Amino acid sequence: ELKVEQNPLFLSMQEGKNYTIYCNYSTTSDRLYWYRQDPGKSLESLFVLLSNGAVKQEGRLMASLDTKARLSTLHITAAVHDLSATYFCAVVKFGGQGNLIFGKGTKLSVKP
Amino acid sequence: ETGVTQTPRHLVMGMTNKKSLKCEQHLGHNAMYWYKQSAKKPLELMFVYNFKEQTENNSVPSRFSPECPNSSHLFLHLHTLQPEDSALYLCASSQVTGGREKLFFGSGTQLSVL
Image 1 (tube, chains in turn orange, cyan):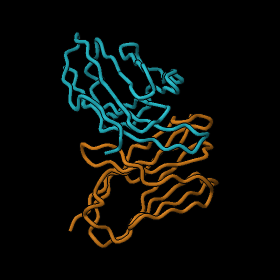
Image 2 (tube, chains in turn brown, yellow; image 1 turned 180 degrees about the vertical axis):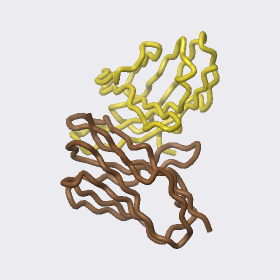
Image 3 (spheres, chains in turn orange, blue; image 1 turned 30 degrees about the horizontal axis):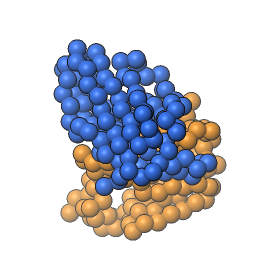
């Protein structure tokens, strides 16, 4: 059974600081997604990581994937308040489309 | 705006009521999904429809009944729900193209069962 674990589940950080969110998954998968969800809003796709060593960056967020370690990281650089949201990683159940298995999410709060 | 519209945004119902959730996608996608988001639990996939055919039912109780009349519309019919069914129900769509598709989510329906 594919399981996805994120840590930390809650993260309070100050503006300007750096931090990393971790996503571990238990079995083979060929792609990993990162999503952002603001309160009362939809999930917004941030990154799709398709291969070992993949790295993608958008603004202050950078995601990477290590398929051998079954680990993805979402690194936040010089955090700003606008990044406050819940971040989810999701892994595709091998062999199925749309069968995303989600982590519990990391609730990020960036304080001035 | 993601191109996936869900109605209603909020729904309160008693355990004996029958109600339906509606999802419409304007993206020309060929697959649609229902997910359940409960407090303190990960998002759970409920149903998958691919070209209007149900391809996955993730052991969902029969009090939840999906309907996909065409590739743009998806319904979730609810009857005799339990209080533990209170959650955010999210609809998503994607264009299935052999493994590189991305899901687009609606804003969800916040359901409270009394």
